[in-house]
Image 1 (spheres, rainbow, N blue to C red):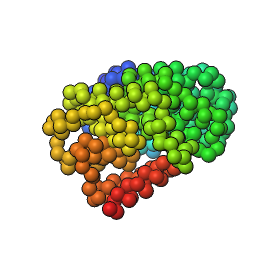
Image 2 (image 1 turned 135 degrees about the horizontal axis):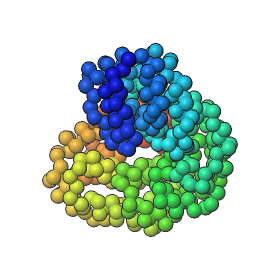
Image 3 (image 1 turned 60 degrees about the vertical axis):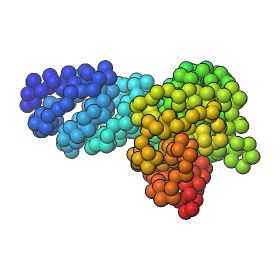
Image 4 (image 1 turned 120 degrees about the horizontal axis):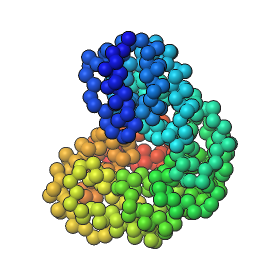
Length: 368
């Protein structure tokens, strides 16, 4: 059987995980001992936990999960995991989906994601209805991601699922909540009334306050996804996206980005995110306020070193990061760099009109 002291330690870890704390590091010997335990004994242990804790476990201990999730373990514990998932409310399932998405790849992660997909596939989407935009879009995006077969039903049910009131922009989490909806609504079958409502809410001057509170990464992701939907609707018009944006929003975005640029920022991730945001604004021709870039350049590595930061980014973040570097260093990115970035676009499984446009743009730069 399983040594009681080891079980006690693991219970402590899962308790810590459920309160958002990183677990202690397991030794290889401990991992091997637990993975060798009879799965029937693990069923009882798992039932003393909850699905959120299991997801955190997979997030923090991917290598250990690979040792634990043997074929016998998966077969015997499947009903137990399904029971845990069925007992988890929708709000927690949404959180679990995010935890799993960020978790390193492992046998355990793939197995639990399959079980979650099976559970979500049984949900009758036409019965869903929310008063909160954040909750609605989180559940919509969860089912959209895990159960592709439900996408037509989801699109058809959007008017009933989403809040009926025309005050979406008043949701304090609007910038985060709108993001997945922008992409979903690029689908040609999306209800056009919902598309219009989201675009109207996203361009409401009232969200200026949210812009000043949002993280730099959230601002970049919000405006890139907003631009994705806008481009789908307006790519054939002469009006640029920057001019389409409400005047108050234009002013707030440029002032807030300028303010952040002038801060004495030392965290390299925040610097990268700010350069990406600046690159996007540079791309849509929304100019920042006059700035002396020399101080930043003096405190950063040479442009060639900064370019290397794009290596761990996916296609779109990498492209706008490079645009931001062009603005910051007042130099063009070299042709071979664009040629190196271009294959990153192949990593995306879904395409949109603006993604195709960005691919063509980078391809042209790679040929210069």
